[in-house]
Image 1 (cartoon, one colour):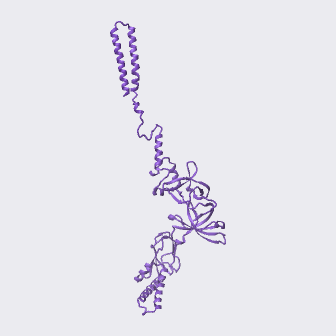
Image 2: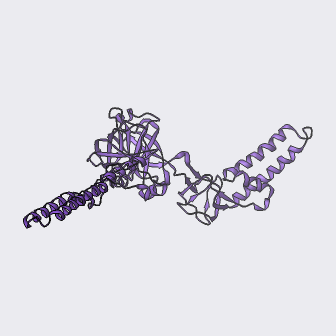
Image 3: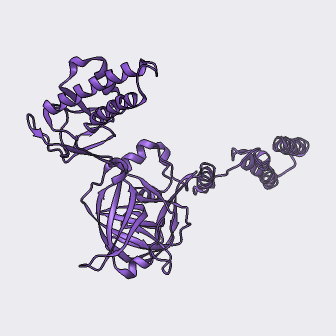
Length: 431
């Protein structure tokens, strides 16, 4: 607007000057010489250029400078052409979404092989280690040995098979089986008859004898590994005398299976063993010096191959072997997924209050961006890297300090998390 006004004023001034010169020329045109007319025309052109040149320059630049002086409203990020605006927006987005903590779905954790353990002990040493052997948990192992001679009529499982409680293992029979079942049916019937009689009709001793005889015959069937339901059904259906189905008493794996079709197994012989491998024991032989540091209920670490698990000391013999001069201790641990088996060799890391630190496998450690050792901790936000101090390394295990006692540490799959952390701007939610 202001530019247009200035332009109009200048044009008016030039027009006035032109008019004045024309009038002067008309009045004295014939009295002026050629030199005077030329000087007048030159003066007119100079004055016109002086007024018109700035106006044309300002009007031709295509910009409204008055509007440019007013800052844009609600401008939060200004890009100066060097990408700084985009960087600030990215940083703000990262802070908003918390990308420092990596989050994985259950499927992603499985594919990456993520395993997490919660630390419960801070006093371990790489020197306090003993060789050990994995054995079955005797509290979760059942040996099946009928207390009468039996004949194997049918096999329903194979060695190593997982079975559930109540599954049929074998069908057994034979002369001794038939005799034991018949004896129980007769004794149960007699006890039922005597029990219905009045006290005046039968003596107390006769009543007691009938009851004891029935319970004795029942106990014989139970020793054959017949269940209460099978015994009850037998009393009401004598036609089934001569055979019965041997059922699994617990959930477990079939081991030490010696039964063969048609074979007659003598009383007391173990036909098979069922073991629940969700828990295993560790037997270790300790020197007297090592045994002094052991207390029942304290934690230990079991290493089998590339796997390490937290275990609990449940017993010690308090007696030295006459040959090896060592003391045996028992350690229990959860065998999730049944990945370990009885008979495998292991290393047992014992607590040592003088050292102070946790034992972690090589798979738990990665290098951070600055080259320092780090582990990944899981919390409610996801997985986060934490720098630690590695005090000592040997045999694939590391004595580490700098972790809280209740930390949840990634012991497998840390390399995957480190790779994701190294990807600048990578959002793990998109994978």
